[in-house]
Image 1 (cartoon, rainbow over the protein chains, first blue to last red):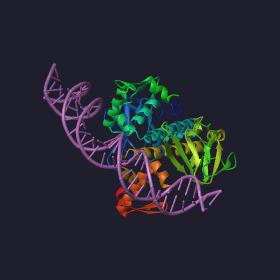
Image 2: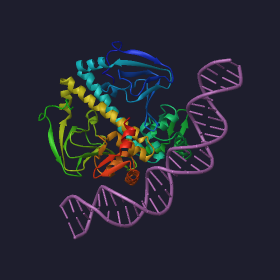
Image 3: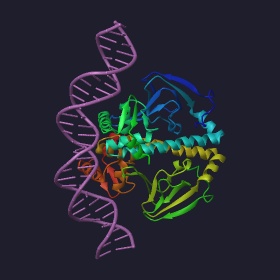
Length: 200
Length: 200
DNA sequence: CGAGTGATTGACTTAGATCAATGACCGTGG
DNA sequence: CCACGGTCATTGATCTAAGTCAATCACTCG
């Protein structure tokens, strides 16, 4: 993983962000890509109606703005949701590395390919009409040994699922009431029945 | 564009499909990638609830299963919606080409990057709750000189927008009634007002 | 020419958005 | 150290837009 990244220290610079600080905004010139060293970064977009879409939460090890490498401007806004350290890789340095080292370029392509897959999966999720089924789908996909660790606040999750936070709270309550899940602070444990149902 | 494709005739083979014929199914072994020479291919996924999600319609020049290059199996199902000719590129041949020619690998990465952008845009679309706004957003994004050419049937479009076909028909009727759009067979023309509103 | 599918419209129902209010928790500045 | 402003979490009430069921036409393809 991340074979494509140039050796540390070459052209990479680190930057520290306070919670709420903007890393880059939509429309800004894309100078390169970022790797999250620690903390969390929320990527969002604002549609023409003013609604905000949470594209995802990037945690330590994740990268940001990969696609912007080939695009002159950023297509989303990145805001730190906690104290965060990011490493910045200069666009030109990366491209040079790709030209020199085909393996790096291929690994990068692989990273993007996985993103495409992940995005398609999320699109599939959005096609599920029922909120409950959508939550089930999400939980099933993210379950590790019957437990899902929420990447951020429940509110963030609501945005990611395309639900209002109220609807999500209600759905989670209902599911808990029905014995489908058990909630702990920051994590959700799936009942054996639900877990088995999806992992045939 | 498509610099990364190996010289024609090297390892590429063509295949002709009748309307309704399946090119590959989800779960099939991914042997390589396809380029649509003529016709149309619908990529779909079926979620656990049995609902079908149209991932998109690929037309002449588009490629299929790029992401599957690095994945052992296909993650969606591809079905020809009309008489279609596809060109097939062997996975191994492509990877060899990428190793030999960094430029090809980089171009391929660029192709994937654009797909990531496009998918994110579609995700953003799905976050719009109102059907009307969603249609407006779609039309605005696809408008070329105030006219949008529908890639397939209206029913397909409904799937792509995450709406039922009935809802889409109604919405289009309403918008036509309100003078926002004018419909022609297979195309939709945006009223100046709407077009301007979005393309500030 | 009949079957199958797309296009279109009607009537009804419901799930989730919206508006609203409250309690818990957290940092922070006086 | 604690009161205060802010955000998250949670639940209630209401409303509406979109889903669902259903029926009719138009059309295309063997």
